[in-house]
Amino acid sequence: MSYELIVNSRTTQGKAVRASRRRGILPGVIYGHGQQTRLVEFPLPAFLKIYSDAGESSLISVKFEGSAETVAALIQDVQRDPVNDSVLHVDFHQVNLKEKIITQVPLLFEGIAPAVKELGAVLVKSLDHVEVECLPTDLISHITVDCSQLKTLDDAILVRDIHVPSTMTVRTKPEEIVASVQMTKAEEVTVEAAQSEAQAVESVEVVKKGKEHEQEGEESKDTAS
Image (cartoon, rainbow, N blue to C red; front, top):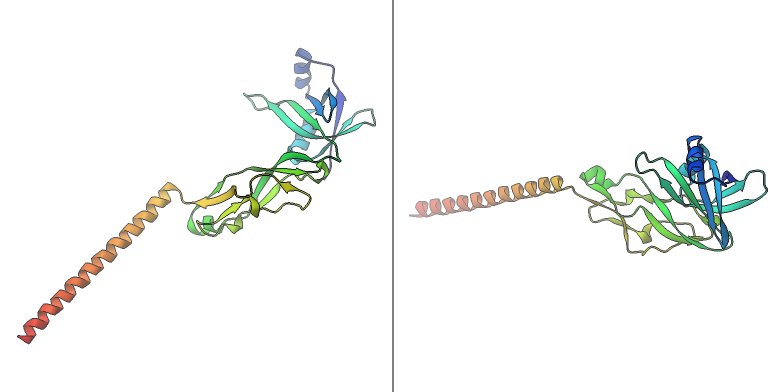
């Protein structure tokens, strides 16, 4: 899927930028690939739609309005207001389509782990992204992780277990854990209590059987005498 964001060159700074934000116009910069940093602005709703779909690991065509110029870029950084979390500023990293890049691709967890459904365990996500190397045109928005592989408490999904396109190389260490399952503390206590109860019952039965054998032995002696 291709994403296109139409921008305008920006000359405003300071208070003028804040006024533009109130009108729904977001400021940003484009840098990288040996090019001079350029100031741009664009409609906030258009950016939010693309950001929601593309994230920071999909290639975006940044097109300058009124011009034939189009720049291939990645959303590099999104600055947000610490109070209301609204988007304040966006950095775009311009790339060369013929040169491989190193970036991060988010992980999307799908499926239900049998250990969660049947054993009452909880899913533990140890990673939310992996580092990859590929051409910009081979980037994908996410990598799917199939949680249905987690059938017992001993199972874990490692980086080497996830599937990526052949055009992409994962640089994160293959032995790193992506996801696993574990019991919660309350469930561990319940399991331990059940095990202790079972052991106690077993011990009582053993003692009871021992006494029964002793009584039988004594009765045999009385009968013999």
